[in-house]
Length: 369
Ligand code: GLY
Image (cartoon, rainbow, N blue to C red; front, side):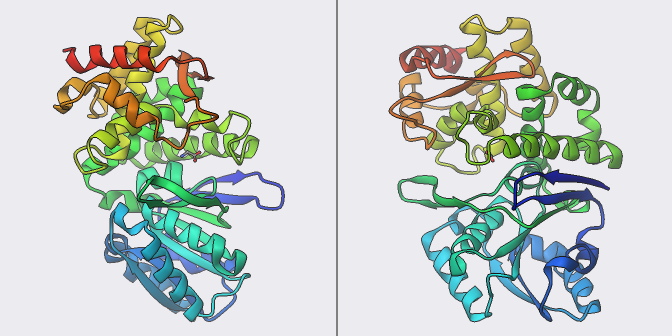
């Protein structure tokens, strides 16, 4: 098992990465259980796969599981779902010192985390991420949010979990496309800050995607350790360090918006394309060699992720894509910071990017290949 501490004064916690954690949840989460029942907010798919094992572990410890089901999909990150969930948690008598369990992917973690941030001005919660994307990204770092008519994740709070149990066994039940999409976020840690990990993934990415035990534990633990370091340095994304985690997200956001945040392009697929575009745009600015940009493209392709926006069949131009970027929550004082590359493993924040130039670059990419 890998145990990665997230070092935050007064709010530090561990991320435990291993197989078998859910089946042994009552022992793993024992310090966070102080009543003879546990409230578990679960994605219906995650509950279908893991509900029995979790319930059995709690029951053996004399704890009654109380389930609250969330419909899978971004639609559940709504005001309405938040209201219903908080009412349910209040009806269960959840107190500040209690811990609510969030079992599932990013949707469940974000919604439950936000409900716990505001419930009685803040109660505890434990993240039980069951997707690769949630294990390496959304369950760690305390960003919680819902979506509103104005956009995704625009209403939320920083609220750190008390524990994250990333059970690697849960990855075996993921559809292959979702696993690959999560892998894009793994690759991101190599591209943004760890050339050695990028090289390791070039050698071992196939083993990770095949869920070979040692490879997948190393990939998840290395990703979580990178995120933990960045979150400890810049918890609230004020110094620029945490913003580096948005590599690929600004281009990706535009593509996700253009495809209606739908199954046409999963978030991780948007991030994969976004990383390729960030690398190519960095090369256009002369900061990165074309060879390095090509290595990023090859790494994305090797994972079976999309790398060419011309293949998406979009009926739009670059200006329409940059217009989507202006609705991104990363806008800061009227400018849009971009995460660009000086090398593989050397991401930086650029505040001097001219959106007209980005639009011209995207026009070329939409037509290329
Ligand atoms: N997913 C980006 C962050 O947690 O900051």
